Length: 344
Image 1 (cartoon, one colour):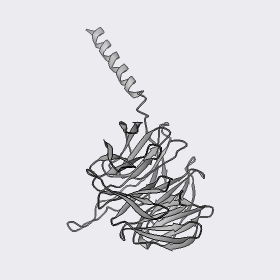
Image 2: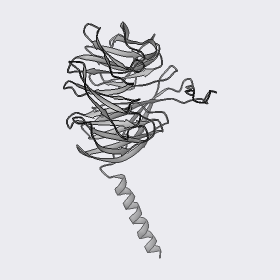
Image 3: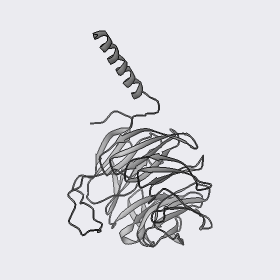
Image 4: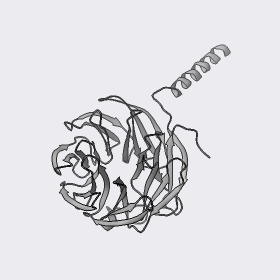
């Protein structure tokens, strides 16, 4: 009897070991935590591969970290309510939602160069290398502010008939963005500045996060209801749907590792593997502190950077009124998610 039990235990151990070493499960976890000074909320992170920097939006400032050491390099201050950072022509561009502006800064000194008036409540902001233009997504005015990064002039304002949440450029003249209140994805010609496609995404309510596999023409779209749609960028048709965590706010694609990361506010990062253009599999769900829902990928080291903080109790509010609990002072943190042993 003891021999049988020992054999069963041995088989169980071998089975668990085999599962832990499965090639499809890379073993992502929080390996490092970096505390940053200052209070207030946060939104997007941007990774600067050339300078090895992580830019972090944080209330009324943008903080820059050394991607390898985690050291604070500097901060752009004096802002009102930042959302995103784009980099172009040796400059940084910050969407300041509470000021209806895009603030341009010098990455060498972190000094503001110029303030550019945008639409109402600019949120996401990205660079299109094909047209060499910066696009700010204005949530309240339902349009895009298009900026020439060389002259720092507004080239055009493009109405999109919906609330733009995020977008990706394919580097070939197309910009794809989701309209959160319309459940749509639209395609914009970045040279002609005209909408060329408008797709209703069935089964994807309040689309938010977005990333793209340019090589295969696939768009990864985060939806409410805990799932991610994979769209054909040529037709707008859904080719796959995957379960993810709740409250997704960022999706990143590692083209070298063929991994898609969906960071969610419920304290999870869903990791999916791309086996083919239309073939996907969830390989693991990494645990993070709650509210770590925005992220940026280091394409060299394959690390993921996320931000979070601790919150106090929800303040009193009327039924239907949108309120958020306060961020507790001194708790704002950048998380490093990778496959290395945790750092103490």
